[in-house]
Length: 226
Image 1 (tube, rainbow, N blue to C red):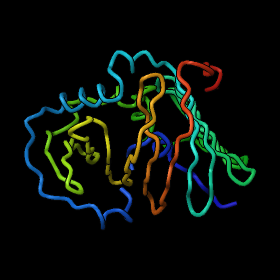
Image 2 (image 1 turned 180 degrees about the vertical axis):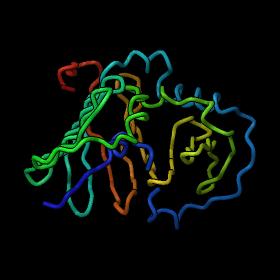
Image 3 (image 1 turned 120 degrees about the vertical axis):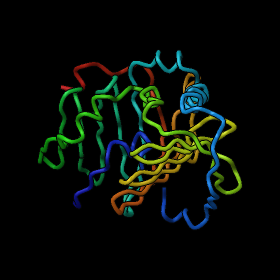
Image 4 (image 1 turned 60 degrees about the vertical axis):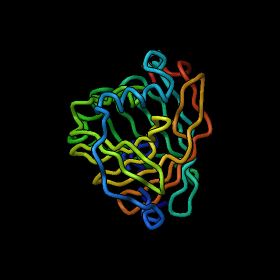
């Protein structure tokens, strides 16, 4: 079996644009928005279901199917605050990625390796709902850009750009040095929106992620991250 490690952010969404799509995406020059970064973030939280409702989510279990390099990979991801455990199953083999809030590892076919030390500080900032971790101070400002004739509010930081639909407030596209992603649809669970279909590319790998189920506040305990 080939070594296949899908970065955890791929499953959750958002740090990775699909090169195949850049040819069909029309980008115009950016203009300054009247909104502040905090207003864009607040609109995003409202679009997802509202900040108080998002904060009520203590744990999630997300079931995905990923298509990569001609293979279908089933993935189950448990989250609790900044802790996560992701199990990917393909061709009878499993790859596990786990972070207990302080340290973590990747286990593939019996070979276990620690998560890179450089990744730990960012992982410690994680939230059960990623959007709650957005800090307006990390963004230099807001511009408005047009993709395929539609306006998006764009937040820019030293890690890349995030494109939010000006109508719904929802995140549509992100790009960063490690890759790009398009959130093609959302699914709604108990009044909260989660990414449904994602098309991503990073590290030379094109990935299509489809979420089939999200379970909220059930089935996850601290024991899962031991």
